[in-house]
Image: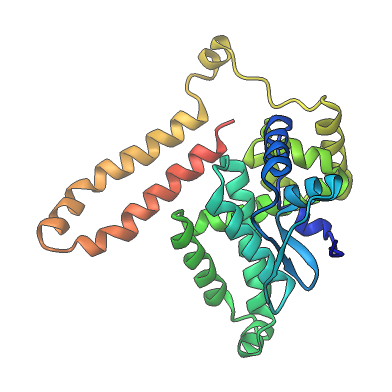
Length: 273
């Protein structure tokens, strides 16, 4: 049987199946064999981890196919794109993958000679912005969301270094950690990250206690409701002028205005705990 290398960074992007699904796959492979080839890059497994695990355990023959990439970052992007295209992922998983894609893409472009002068002179803001815009279009979210996803990915990766089990629980939705908390952890000291990871792993992590009706009454209006009210009032106040632009054939000018409101609503949605 061919010698295959398991790269832990790549493997972590290939989610382990739950016990029932893994069992069904195992039964299928035992009965029908491994019909789909495993995908390798320089002898490193980049797709088919669960099939490989079952095949090696039961001595089931399998085939492989090799793909060529110029860097680890290109492999990461390929794995991410493959996972996103084939799975029904939760929002936290999608945000994590988008953030990893953004970071890998920036690293590839940052090492490309044609951009070295801009990077060294600190004039690469437009270039980085275009990266976020391109991925935003691909994933059908805002560029602001893509940038926030990069912080989310940094935090989850840091938690994973402290505790792989804590990372697994977050991505599996077994523990509720708000995006706001995770984004803040992206720049937090290692001790704080390790403390949060430990609590998640041992099951003692608790989110902020939900407000009771008494709390709401005492605060008069929740901050989230106040923010939503501000966004809606601003949209309503500008509606007449936007409607006039539309009548005058200026629909293209509405897109940046609408995108601004969509970004604000996305931020509000993400921050609700």
